[in-house]
Length: 136
Image (cartoon, rainbow, N blue to C red; front, side, top):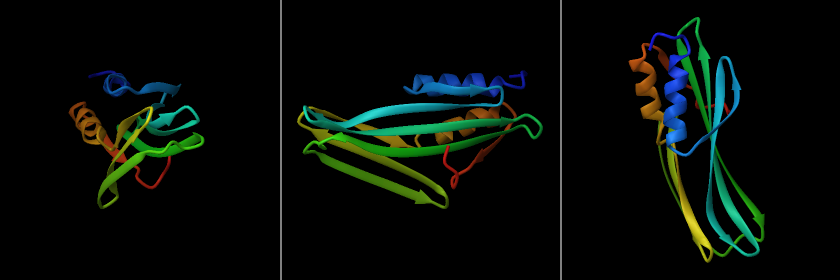
């Protein structure tokens, strides 16, 4: 990976392979989003959206990563069984949200790609900076 933007190509590939859609591209960064329906029925739904923001600082050869997870309801929230589990070590949080309702369900895992992205960046000879306290 010799191009100054080589980590971006590989990061985009990993994120699109994990079901993310790339948006808001610029020469020094992009945002990736993934939405999962946790529960739905005829009168409404409950969804979770995961956003990852990647910013490259070519001067310091650093890739900055930010993550956010938001949950939204539309209409009348469906009668559903929702479960959430999370683990936190320092500023790094991982979480799993799962939902099951009459019209189906889904699961989203927050933080699951972070270590894979970090490893990819470091193999390319760049530094990886996780910005936990800043929303994308």
